[in-house]
Image 1 (cartoon, rainbow, N blue to C red):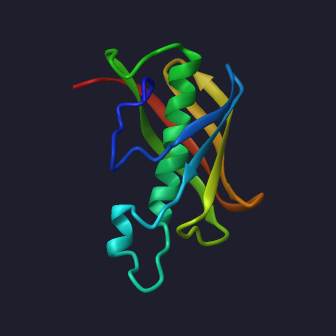
Image 2: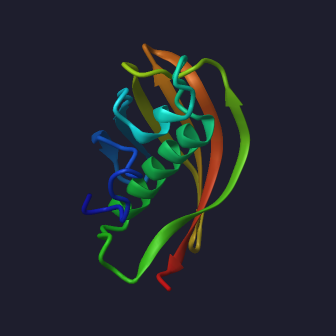
Amino acid sequence: MQRLPHRYPFLLIDRVLDFEAGKSLTAIKNVTINEPMFQGHFPQAPIFPGVLIIESMAQAVGAFTCMTVERTSAEDTLPILAKVDKARFRRQVVPGDQMILKVEILTNKRNFWKFKAKALVEDKEAAAAEIMCVESAIA
């Protein structure tokens, strides 16, 4: 929570498991039935929305960039989602699943960062994407 400005109900990372500065980060998101999106997506067959899987991976990217440059969420700039490419969804994520979020840096040019990101459930890929973020001044 020191690294990201997100808070409940939109903080989608529960814990950082591993971090290697300038290389990679691994985090977890525990998916529980108590989360607000399950009231409407879908009550009889709850599925964690794909867009929130992407957001979970993007928050892992944000945590990586802030930890790499040793920045807190209280400072003047934040990593902002700029682009998502090659997004693929391979399996549903449902309440009770634990997503392992893995991000690996591909490039860093000036204030633009590009990553390879994956969300795994039980060691199987649930989703993957290339995610770009940009360090942006807080308005």
